[in-house]
Structure formats: structure tokens, C-alpha cells
Amino acid sequence: MNAAPVPRDIHAELKGVTRIYPAVPGAGAKMPVQALGAVDLDLVRGEFFAVVGPSGCGKSTFLEVLAGLQKPTAGSVSFEGKPVSGQVPEGIGVVFQEDASFPWLTVWDNVAFGLRRSGVAAPEVRRRVEDAIAFMGLKDFARAYPSQLSGGMRQRVCIARTLVLQPRLILLDEPFGALDAQTRLLMGDEVLRLWRRTGSTVLLITHALDEAAMLADRVGAMSARPGRFIEIIATGWPRERDSTIVGEAAFGEITGRLWERLRGESLKALGHSGVSATAAE
Ligand SMILES: Nc1ncnc2c1ncn2[C@@H]1O[C@H](COP(=O)(O)OP(=O)(O)O)[C@@H](O)[C@H]1O
Ligand SMILES: [Mg+2]
Image (cartoon, rainbow, N blue to C red):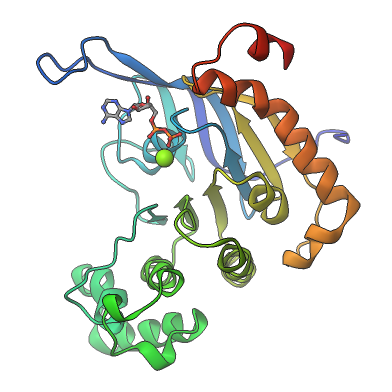
């Protein structure tokens, strides 16, 4: 499927990355848990990369290690040629799975929060917040509080909050997990729009194979824990695309291939090891 190798502009790189959570005596965790790896991955500047894998396989751990929120047990992570360790580097923005908006702040103040903290001048804050709010379709709700919004809109607030920081690499951890299927499809279009406008590199973690197949340039399928990439599929979609591609034959082929790779891994994650897992190899 892949043509001859072309020089690629590597934006972020993981080499031999593992993450083992230590045993916590007295807290139930008697044994260390290897959550990840070893993982090797090059993210190409400007690409949209999706990660799918069974629940508990280490996807969030992977994202947190890449973001600098957790240290790898072994291996190395770099972003724009510099090692990542200990904190989220300038230039990386994270959108978390749970609704992380501040309930006591209006939409406007939620979106402005990070910029104000980083000491950006007030007129610049105003300009960037207004732009992000308009871009995410929240103009009429700028003075509303999160509790007055739907789940989809709250998630847009969280995306706007990351967007104002102008990240060059955007990491999203199952941002649509709690939304209904139709809203998820539309939010997928929002993320595509965001990706195209910002020119950022986007890494999206999702448990939904259709979402990954529809949105990404490449989809990495992770094994059951400890998570490793068992296959990386290039979708071949044009940059201009939207959720209508779910009607294309290639879309069915990609989701079918992903499910074929992940079925056995998902069974392992459910505790059905042995026959069913090997049958899918
Ligand atoms: N802070 C932690 N301490 C100990 N174990 C953890 C911690 N966070 C996650 N784990 C374990 O690591 C594995 C992977 O978790 P996670 O990365 O959240 O998976 P996913 O996002 O794919 O559902 C799970 O078995 C989980 O229980
Ligand atoms: Mg997770």
C-alpha cells in the first residue's frame, strides 16, 4: 500500500516508549501494571493521526506520555526535535475525555483562562478568545455557563480553550465519548475544520473505529494492554473531506480492516484469552 519512502517532516517522535505503573502497597495495586509499549511512532507534521484500541489498553497513558504529563518508564519522547519530559511543552494542546470546563466560569472566561494565566495582553486575549468562540460556533453562548449548555457544546468550549493557545500539536483523548452518535459525527467535522484551518498536527484517541476511519490520514490500532501499535493504516483521504465519506466503499474497507485487527485484542481486554484471541491473529 505504501509507495517508496519520501522524506518526512517528523513533528513528534516516540522511541521504545513503555510505561509501567508501580505497585501501590495498601491501595489494591499489588503488582506493577505495564500499561504501554514498547511504542515507536513518528507523527508527521500536519497529519491527522487517530489511535484506536480496546478499553484499558493504554491509550490515555500513551497520550499523557506524549504530552509530557507522565514520564515514560523507558524510551524517549521528542516534540519539534526537543525531548519532552516533566511538563507539557509550549506548542502542545490537550483536550481531555471528561468535560474539563470550569462550571463557575462563563464560556468566555473558560476560553480566556489559559491565555490570561500565560500573561498575554488583554487586547490580544480578547481577539483570540472572540475568534476561537466564533470558530467553534459559540458566539451566542459566550456569557452562558457550562451547565446551561449541551454536552456537545461543552466539549466545543474545551476545544476552543485549547485552540486559543494556538497549539501546533493538538492531542484529543476521546473528546466525543459522552456524545450521541449524530453529535459525534458533527463534532468530527468540527475537528476536521480545526485541523485544516490551523495546519496543526492532530492526534485523536477514540474507541470508535468509524470515527478514526472517517477523520484520520493514518489510524494506529493498539493491542490489548500493554498497548503497542499492531497496525498503522493509511486511509488515503483528501485533505478536503467531511463526514459524508462514511458512504464510500473505502470507508467500509478501512473500518472492516480495523475491526479485523482489533476484534481479538478487544476479546483479550474482556478477559477472553486463548481461542478467540488466537483465531484473530
Ligand atoms: N495512575 C494509574 N495507576 C495505576 N494504573 C493505572 C493508572 N492509570 C491507568 N492505569 C492502568 O493502566 C492501564 C491503561 O490505562 P489507560 O491508559 O487509561 O487505558 P485506555 O485509555 O486505553 O482505556 C489500565 O489497566 C489502567 O487500569
Ligand atoms: Mg482512556
